[in-house]
Amino acid sequence: MKIREKVLRHYSGDVPFCQCCGENHMEFLGIDHINGGGSDFRKRNSGGAQIYGWLKKNNYPPGFRVLCHNCNMSIGFYGNCPHQRQDDVIVSGPGSELCSGCGAHLANWRETFGDEPCCEDEKRKRDWDKTVVREDDGEQC
Image 1 (cartoon, helix red, strand yellow):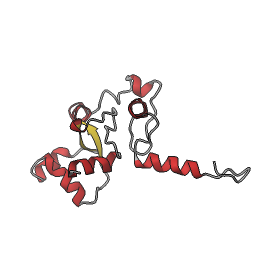
Image 2 (cartoon, one colour):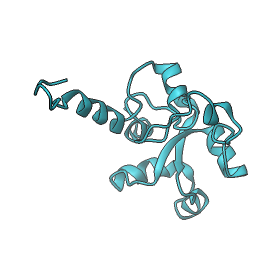
Image 3 (spheres, helix red, strand yellow):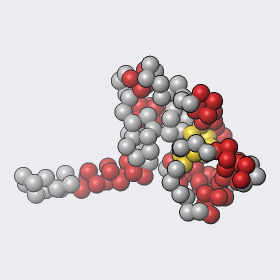
Image 4 (cartoon, helix red, strand yellow):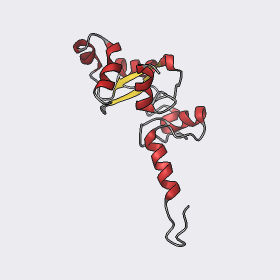
């Protein structure tokens, strides 16, 4: 497995996907600096391709996520992505639930992957929910 794929999997799960729109074609995915700073990073590190090695070398620090290039560029150019705007159906209408672990639009994720968990946090939450013991009868749920 190439380093780029390892990094994308680390930040979004076994099947890498855009945490904004759910896109899952590897060719369309990249790393986003959640709080901005991509330009500064590229200036300090001789370009954007270095980010994958840097993230691995620095033990996958927080503050990064996987986005498709469209969502990432929209956020960079306009400060938001159409998938995130309040007037967008996916945000304000049915299916607007966001994953508490990675922030993905769960409606987009479920449309592509069904009921599979979208990230490690969601998987851990589901595993935990399965082992909760009911107080009334002491049986495992």
